Length: 341
Image (tube, rainbow, N blue to C red; front, side, top):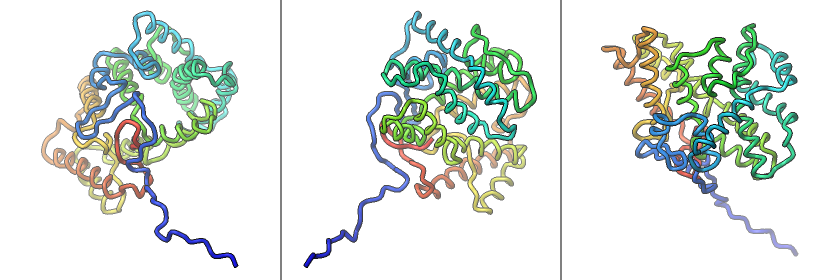
């Protein structure tokens, strides 16, 4: 007579939300949430934002060190040359609905670009490095081109004489940006170049672990980034600011949102216990742009708007904590450890 198998009624341990799960060691990026620091290859993000360029940071992240003058010149040239999209990709972008979310457009375009990459079937490290640079170069062109198409505007070709951030703004707006706006976009690209083992990086890592091609791993990352609990949270924060409209209405908007048991999204990542260094850097640029445009800033007002600012910060933290790992977002932060966006 066969005896029934014994089962462990306790079951295996389930780590919900992938909170504090170490999956890989890396020297690329380190998030120090306790002290509010973000490091790329050991370099503080504040130093990179103050003294570096996006092209230099691309080389740093891919190669593990800062480039010398010749290497930086070549990196700039490679990115400039890689910004041009194949004609068939332009036709694809023209065929997409004008209401299509830009993240969906980018994901679809990356999948299509795979077919035109001359090294698509070469999976060596050297080939993947070159493909990575081409994708970095083409991302901005895809976004800018679709923005022009859906607004019924003439598509602009990339200008290899301009820096990456500056040319992105030119292709998007139709005119060359001034030095302040170009530098702000350059810094923004630096700030969001990496953030350790966040959800999209983890998604790409899972895809890469199956020995899939580089394009497929990027598509997995983009699909993850789209979620409102990851990259989509930035869009939600912008929508919230548009709904509040003015500093005087901020408190009313926050309280109404909380009464409806909805989330108040804000800028800055919850993993930082002091301050998100990226938000701190961008706040100063926002002030500079507002002063140039004679726009009253949220942080410079008094009275009720100051109270509203406090409500926004407190409510965002409260909502983040209350959702915990039940929403599927990793919460912790460390090199090689899962974290949020």
